[in-house]
Structure formats: structure tokens, C-alpha cells
Amino acid sequence: MLRVFLASHAHLASGLQSAVELLAGIGDRLFVCDAYVDGGTFDVSGALNDFLADAAPDDQILLLSDLYGGSVNTALVPALVDPRVRLVSGANLALVLAVLLEDAPIDDDRLAEMVEEARGSLRVVSIGGNDEQYPSDDGTDGFFE
Image 1: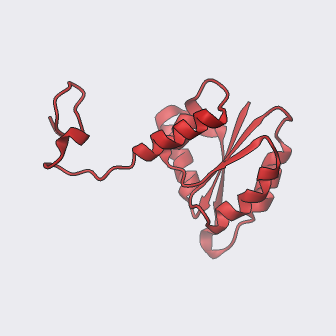
Image 2: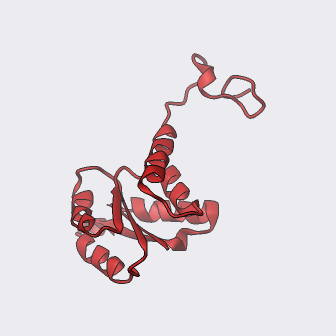
């Protein structure tokens, strides 16, 4: 079984969980850790250790963080000694949804594809100019056509 742990600074993790619940009704499949909320600190390592302790030996474990090299991401890195664990930083809603909606086990190649697809969802949106970037559903070009 795939188990997903999403950690972030402030309430980004729980906000993404809320969006996943709204869009797909599966927010409960995501364990979240909001760090540094309400002016304090949050023990990311402790929350991660609790999460890992509940995992079965044959579980796939995916750790997601908000910012590469940030303190939250850095707190997750030591878990990579466990061969079941993989870590992706820079998580966005597109990635979280893709991971949670995937039917099959996610190998390294598929995870890399998912990261690229999620990265592709980052766009500068404008009207006019290069409208081919935003084809409409009916095949015509243009953001609002």
C-alpha cells in the first residue's frame, strides 16, 4: 500500500489536504504535518517517526515537502535510509492528486513522470500573445475561446 506524508511550513500541507478532499474526496489518505504554526515549532522528525512506525514492511512510503533544502525537507532526508521511502520536494496540488489517484504501485520511473507532469502545470497565464499554450477543449487556440 502507498502511504503519503506531506510536510510543509505553516498550513500549506493541511491546505493541500483540504483541496484534495474537496476535489477527490480522498484527503484522509494523506498524512500531513504543518510545521512552525502559531509562532511555535513543530517536531517534523517526531511526526515522521510516528508515521513510519505505523507503516507495514511492504508499504511504499512517499514523503512530500514544500521547499527543497528548507528545514522541513531537511528533517525528512534521514528517512531515505529506509529502502521503502522516497522523497519529493516542491510538492504542488497536481502532484499530490496524481500520487493519490494512481492505481498501481509507483516505481521510480513513474514517480519521475508524475513530477514532470506536475511541474508542467506551473504556467504563466495571460491573454493574448502566445495563445497556443492554452488550447481550448474544442481544439481551437486561445485561452478564452
